[in-house]
Every structure is written in structure tokens, then in C-alpha cells.
Length: 127
Figure 1 (cartoon, rainbow, N blue to C red):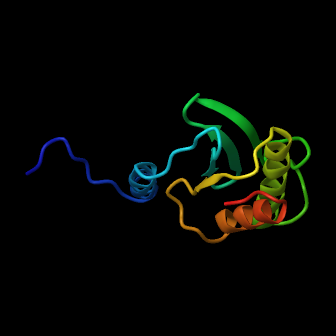
Figure 2: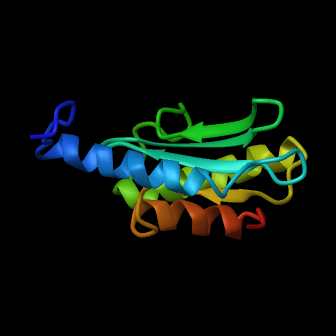
Figure 3: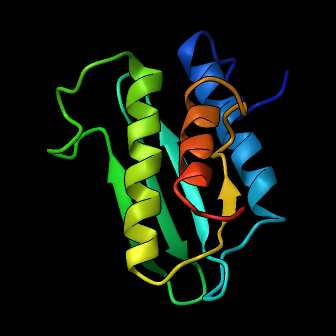
């Protein structure tokens, strides 16, 4: 019997799997001043996108479904993710960012994550 390892069930197992994938992704992806990292954090209810310069450790732009311009908006969660993607791209462009490295945060590139990324691309952010 292996000590120190817990057998996870349900949501705890899913969150641990997402965390493992995110660590594996972050080994290869890092944001710089020229190409900061666009990281997406997803919960059951909300989605948050941040543009981060990992060298300085600064957040250059951010947007989420908790922002007053998006909160209580019409549409499903994918539609709200599109609004977040467009908003974070607009704020990043205002901060002088043209190109980013996309960090999906260990989540599958489908659904809300893909909707956010597509909206950010349509708004003029390159990745």
C-alpha cells in the first residue's frame, strides 16, 4: 500500500487532472514582454482571462464574466466567454500587446475555451 497518496473521486479527481495538465503545459509555455501569456481560468460558472508578463510577474490586462460590462449579460456561458475574449483582446491592445502565447490552463481546447480564443483572435490578438 502506498502511503501519502489519496484516491480521489468525482470533482476532486477532475481538478487534480486539470492541475497536472496545466503544470505539464507550463513547462513549455512562458510569457515575455514581447509575447505575454494569455491564461484562461474556468470554473463552473465563470471564466477569467489574463494577459501576463511572466518575466516581470505583472498582469497587463484582464477580463472576466464578473466584469460589470459582461455580468448578467444575455446568452449562455459560451456567449459570455466570447465577450470575455473580445474584452481581454481590446484591453491588451490598449496596453500595447499585439501577440500572445495561449495558455488553456489544463482545460480541453473546446467549448468555452475555444470560444474565448476565437473571439480574441477576431478582435485582433495574434496567437
